Image 1: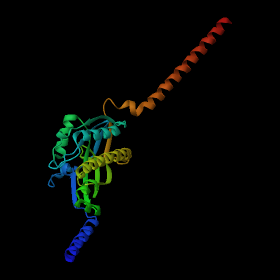
Image 2 (image 1 turned 30 degrees about the vertical axis):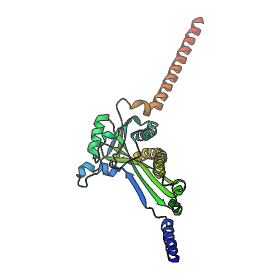
Image 3 (image 1 turned 180 degrees about the vertical axis):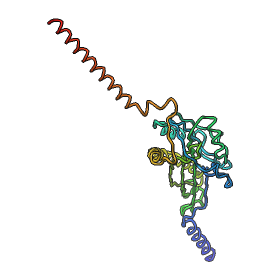
Image 4 (image 1 turned 90 degrees about the vertical axis):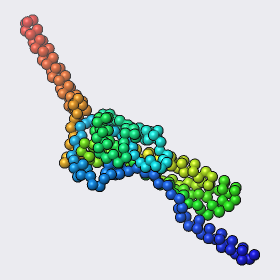
Length: 292
């Protein structure tokens, strides 16, 4: 009997040591990759991937799309979630005068490993000049802590949150000029969530953490995107060897020359005013001489 008790104590100590080390024993990873989508074949000809000079005709027509991910694994990001995030990104672009129109591209139009040939098709279909490719990367870890020893009882499995979860999420926006294959800029959004759960509600808690992580990372992305847009405008000014800017037909005058047109208009009114004063003064002189 003492030997059996000693053996149970030894097993219990080993369990405590194993669960107390904090080693993650479960991991889930879901992602999509812009690099895999655009450069799927390392043997691609240099002419197909070498970026040229980006000739941007303002105002731009911008497309926004999610690159395809691994469809064999379940993912919490639904088409409605993607549409909601694309609308948030679109609002940031719409606030800038150099953007004329924005197209939200359905996921079905992007092929896995489609590369720039797929983007050329999208450009022909939607008439966009620039595209913002959205990608995600999310990893969830689960570790059974010391309190998981309570799972030996039925009640403990329902009420003791012994599962420790960690959710790392990143959403990345990469903006390309389609014709030149040149990367214009990128903006990341990052989030980290810690939580606890019982074995019974573990799957539900992980789904909730996944969606919350995506939402928080999206908010961070939108904030960073605004900063990158401002920096991009400065980069264009100082890199004439990489970017050429021109006004599209029908859009050149008002935005760029509005202040000059206003000044010329005011000068015209001033000249007309002076002419009217001269005319009035001449008529006064003629009236005076006639009365004399």
